[in-house]
Amino acid sequence: MILSIALTINVRFIGIYLLPIFIFLFYINKDFKIYLIDLKLLSYCFTLLIFFLFLLTPQLWYDPFSIFDTFIKSLTVRDLDPQILFMGEMISSSNLPSYYLLIWIAISTPLLLVLLALSGFFFISKKIISLKLNDLKYQNDFLIMLLVFLIPLIFAMVLKPNIFNGWRHFYFLYPSIVYFAVYGLNKLSEKKFITKIKEYFLILIFANFVYLFFWSVKNHPYQNVFLNLASKKYIYYFETDYWGLTNVNAIKEILKIDKSDMIKIAGIGDNRIDFSLHMLNLDEIGRLKYIKIGEKKDIDYYISNLNDGNSREYYLNNNFKIIKETKVDGNPINLIMKK
Image (cartoon, rainbow, N blue to C red; front, side, top):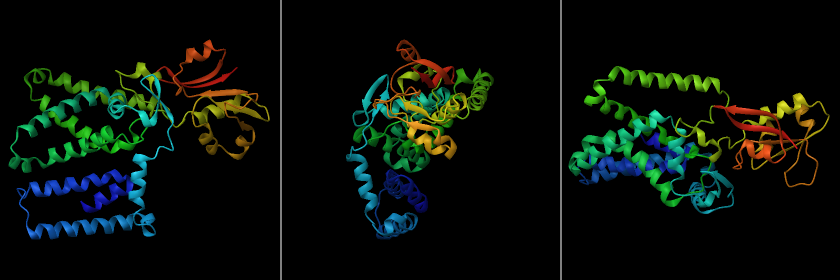
């Protein structure tokens, strides 16, 4: 357990919240009675945690307190404060609403999983609330999952650290979501109205997995651009291809259709074309000149991954000619254009 906590902190400092959960559950099972031997055991565990964390984190070898400094800066420093497309508006990442994380979890998780997880969360919360304090020790599994899910979520909603592009920094919440969904499925299967249609219910779940599998195969390598069935029509309201993964193939397509010795390309919005250039070979890079959109130079091709709040129709209405487009679920996620 201590090694697992150290590994978690090593990946994301916020993982330190597992330590107070561990201590809380420890004392629940002791009926909150504190003995000297228990304090010695906890001191030993804490010392072991520091040892493992130090062993796993080389930067602590020369600066033991740097991990705390990094964490504090992530909450307070706003040097990186890009404009983020969220719910159809361009918003500063330091000024995102507290429900930003909740919305992204809701729209980018398969709809059936969201519904089952909500039902499981409801059943577990209801069960925990109905228990007396001394009975909580018999529900360790439920408590762990609830606390592991709720503490970082509340932390993000209240303190609003500078996060953006979905919930990639909080993907460690996914096991809890799956746990809630499985528990919700189990509890729902006990209900009379579900029992009568149990076979159809199971077929629906199986069909959902099959759909997701073939969807991922069909949209490879851009299956990361996923919005669930209730949300996909709002694809232009969110930054779906934040890191510009589609840009590499867009650039290669330009090199294929244009045989010029030097091609000037520009990215519309903050679409990470400069990152994509590092994934090209020397011959490909030698034929390209990357121009920032504000520079007064002739540009041969524009690339947009539609993270600026503008749709395909917007560009057509503003005298852009679309040369090639990449689509997911029939919606463009990358445009190669001339003007």
